[in-house]
Image 1 (spheres, rainbow, N blue to C red):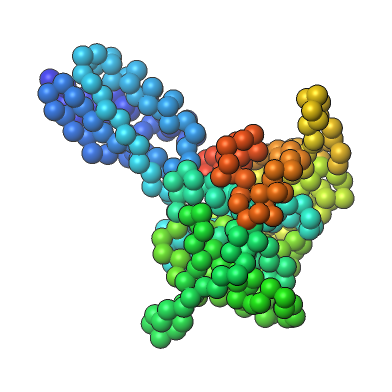
Image 2: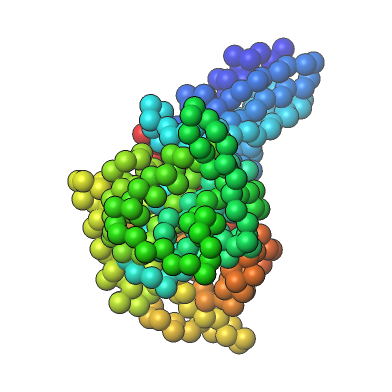
Length: 348
């Protein structure tokens, strides 16, 4: 008769492909049930965005069948995202991800939107802050330009209840100020607004909060990095030199002691265009983002081609990752890479 001890001993030979420790040591095996010739248990993953579920399952079956081939093994997956800092979680937000760029026009908001929706599509609880106070574009990309968040009273203060769209909880100054009005503030006011968009919002429980930062290295970036436990940053660039030079400044900012934030990696946007004959055309130069990642020993999280479907989806308010095409697969891969990187870093 197979026992729970037999099962755990067998599964101690199966490694998590990313963390490189066995599933038993990582306490990932849950709810073992043994009934006649059927064994069921759950594997609690460190992220719902794990792309290697089938490999883990097959590795488990391979080990378990060494004990008894006649037993039916029923393996199910759950997930519990590891928080960046258990002692300083902000309003039950496990991980804050800053998406930034050295300059504007590189597609940072498009990427932030698709990362948020992509992680949610994989089963995570996700929020999104449009922290580009002066040029908010997230409401357009989520087709909610004409909506306004509501408020609730809690502990004597008003909390914003975020808009929910495509499974994402989102807030933006574009939802709080009429779209035909310009926000004319000095730096301190923008920084204060940045704090409020995190603290004074009823986020509920989130696995990931994506913060779409404005371009550059401004007060808002400093406020975020110095006041909140940011899990990591994602730097967006395009291949040309004028973009990568500015992206280097973003890397340098997060590497400084006062604004020290782990850099999860680089995303290269608008990397190439594929013509009808299948040839790649490098309109904005070739491999600038790749060279930047190599220079600073950072991971290249994704390489996004020029695709009119991406821009059309953003303009129509329906992020392309929700579709089933080549571009959505690129963003899904980026989400897997980000979730994997966070899981590995948080476990250390």
